[in-house]
Image 1 (cartoon, rainbow, N blue to C red):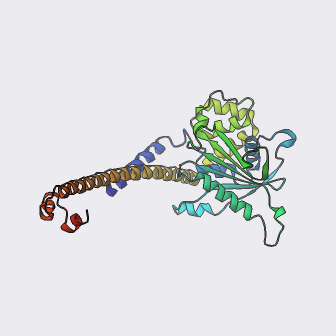
Image 2 (cartoon, rainbow, N blue to C red):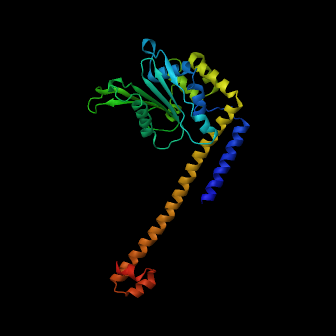
Image 3 (cartoon, one colour):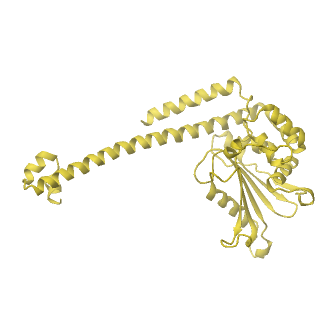
Length: 314
């Protein structure tokens, strides 16, 4: 079964490579983690990241984020090139000291809730040096873009704070704020309002299934999206970036197909074990009935295949 699974995974990878080679950038995936980082998370990407975060946080006018500093991650390129799995997230410090962590998660690993809390806590705890006053700890905002249906029924944008159970208006602290942008729910949304809602415009850009004309319309309304598209064109003009993008897409396909076939193999194994367990229980029940009827241990053993020792214990 394992060899069959590996063969199917290789076949899936080959077919995926063929599809990508046929038209690899016709439907570019903006949520490819490597590509997202290159477009939104490098030094010089402050303008588009600023626009995106203002859209997510609902900031505008005097309440908008005025400036930010991107804390660039330079450790992942070597890991990507060596084929290792790595986490590509974006960390920025806003003008008021608030820290924002942005992560894209395409595959559902059933851990995004705790994972997000873990990354939030790492950013939060690392913000205080030994001996400093706890009051110096900043607000930390986590923004998670997920391409699976996390928290079904909650809508495409969920936001969490530390609130009192019986009085939700009572907030313990504004230090924690966690957002989830659910792309599955977004695609189901009717009545998208790109005219008036900047977050709708950004999600149109991030959804690779959005019609090109809709993307163009949304970009024409938002200079931040226009800047992101210009950066996208720039990075994709580089052959090495194209190769790394394709590698990440193929790795994602491998991960999805591997989980699928592992699940199928597990289900098949579970069915086989269940059938065996059912047969064993049936034999034991027959042996008990034979024993009640007064048959000898030897006769029961011959009739059921159970050992005399096992029959004695019934």
